[in-house]
Amino acid sequence: MIEFQHVSKQYSADATALRDVSFTVNKGELVFLAGPSGAGKSTLLKMIAAMERPSSGRVIVNGQDIGKLKAAGVPFLRRNLGLIFQEQRLLADRSILANVMMPLMVTGQPRAQAEQRARAALDKVGLGERANAAPLALSGGEQQRVSIARAIVNRPQIILADEPTANLDRASADRVLDALRAFHSVGVTCLISTHDDHVLAGAARVIHLKQGQLQNNSDAPQAEVAA
Ligand code: ADP
Ligand code: ADP
Image (cartoon, rainbow, N blue to C red):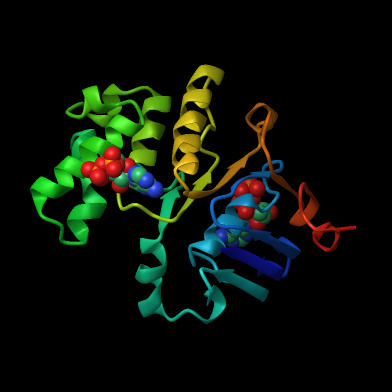
């Protein structure tokens, strides 16, 4: 479903974010992307969403070569992706229900249907009762769960979450992870980055990045392990 083949990314002569990274994520997998700040985790996730292009190597998502994707193809790619990135803040001037409805409204869905699906998505992250609250009335962990609801309301096949538990206390972080795991359990492929070891406890598969290089890749064929 997601395949990196010898992917490198150089932002400039002295900023290399990824070096010869190869791995595969299969449909329905839950994979954690671990590594310290600056290891290249965000860059890797952004490439899957065509927010960055590889300098060399190939990134294949759902059979499509992202490096060759034309601008017109990007919205079609992203329709299959639920993105949870720090950059995408909730809009403070409207309710969390309205925030979660937005991805459905921009694709032209009728308001009543959008509202029903957004309420169902908020229920799934445990915030159905707070639908009319303003984002700033919620805790950081609750806001992050709203971001998850907004990311999944279009029923994407893949969820990409960049440090979704950053700045959260452990209890809030656990609830955020539980919300993500619930979508994994119904078949959604999930790739979640973290620099927090606690998040990795019990993870079935972890891809470790350090200074842009793959360190190990549990459950992966030997050929994918960087020396
Ligand atoms: P992480 O998500 O693991 O913290 P990033 O992918 O954000 O890592 O960054 C990896 C490296 O690439 C860092 O050295 C960072 O400074 C650099 N980098 C990230 N984005 C850019 C950019 N837009 N321009 C230049 N350098 C960048
Ligand atoms: P509805 O059929 O009204 O959308 P569901 O209870 O089936 O209600 O889904 C609740 C929410 O969870 C929906 O908004 C849906 O977009 C979201 N969701 C995302 N991916 C999935 C999935 N793979 N399976 C079920 N629900 C999903």
